[in-house]
Length: 237
Ligand SMILES: Cc1cc2nc3c(=O)[nH]c(=O)nc-3n(C[C@H](O)[C@H](O)[C@H](O)COP(=O)(O)OP(=O)(O)OC[C@H]3O[C@@H](n4cnc5c(N)ncnc54)[C@H](O)[C@@H]3O)c2cc1C
Image 1: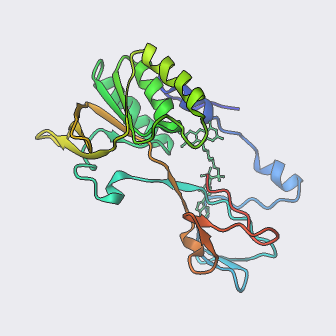
Image 2 (image 1 turned 120 degrees about the vertical axis):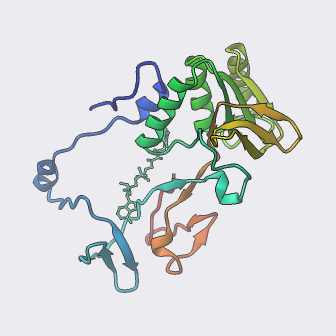
Image 3 (image 1 turned 60 degrees about the vertical axis):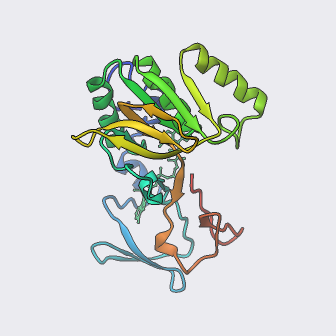
């Protein structure tokens, strides 16, 4: 196992999840698995059971496992005003983490607003607080991680965060961002009329399954591919 090289004491939680499992190509071939790297599938024909790569190579299969992952939902997808300002971050790829680390170092002791009260929001709220930013979290639900936590469990975490100095604003959403002449974010505007000063904004409002390759060829449900046992399996986490 080898960890990513992020700064000390920064995004500690994130680092834990970004361990890279090093498996040699030899290990695959020894087990009868053909490993084809640096290859993007750009076309899938489920009727003929054929996949086509960006370089035009074709692959046929008997069983297809779709494990293409997901992409981050961005506020600009919904036309939120100012959502493309500088220093508004998402966390999905290592590059995203590197950019965020650079901003944390550049905005020492500044104000951070976290949009979203899920895993990413909670983890990044903690990471920014540890790095001495003045953190405010905003989410519309009555408590954090509402799909997983009961009110009681959430109250424990929210109390823990409050004791660390993290402010939590619930029951409203970010509807816009103000920026300065350089395009750097300076404030988050909330639906309830409040305005939060911000040097850094981190948005964690969910992911979207990467299923475009299969559009029109599979039944869809809740933004992903509908799972039918003995047919398709997808894990759009
Ligand atoms: C910051 C962060 C923290 C997280 N923390 C946790 C955690 O603590 N615990 C947890 O369980 N989960 C965590 N997750 C979620 C976890 O990363 C995902 O659940 C997991 O990566 C999903 O695995 P996957 O294989 O479905 O998709 P991915 O890991 O996204 O893998 C998808 C793969 O498909 C490839 N691919 C996509 N399209 C194509 C194509 N057209 N052709 C060929 N290849 C393609 C991609 O290149 C990639 O290799 C975290 C995620 C993030 C962003």
